[in-house]
Image: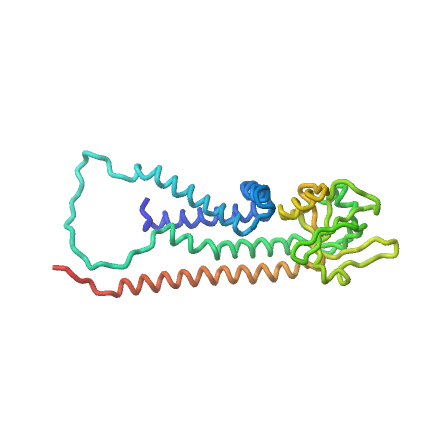
Length: 284
């Protein structure tokens, strides 16, 4: 495969986009190889690092692409015993080594991940919709038909919770005496509980925020390690989170990622012009 072929360049760029998109999907939905690697780390170390797990998957994709390229390399070689056109070799001046195409594409992975993350955040803000009035019972009975909602959710908070980096995960049930598998959690900053957890006259709480499906593997593992069964997937109401904030954050991330791609392209163009401007030496 000739890396300088424009068609091959477009194919490689499309493959990189697909690779990043699949990795982001597995990361945010906690599925596929991402979940396998995360649970393997949890088994070995008791926790996992989401960013490193995603990077491991991307490196796996690159390794697979490299292996395919090596396997198919023979198809690109000339057929033996056929006359080949000869060309006069003209000595040229030594030039700086041009990075291999795959190394050039690796540079775009980071900004593409940022763009993908921003697009995901913006999509969440768009799909959350208008404010709804829901209860914990709606989540427990499976009445939710969308993966993300913006709502005031009312229910009974459990007396037990899990804290991770000053962020609390509190089980919420329809009844105060309920127990069993947790299907709904309230996520709130421990310093903002008084602001976002509104207590009602009957002792229940109302929490306003964006509720979506999915929980980090190490958090779910910590619950189960303490004897609290958590359904998969589980809903989490992130107190204080609003669709408008997701949209704004997503647009900022997309802009940062696009700026990163533009900067890399500008640097590549500058280097090409600089190399092309050097005078040739050693010609007869």
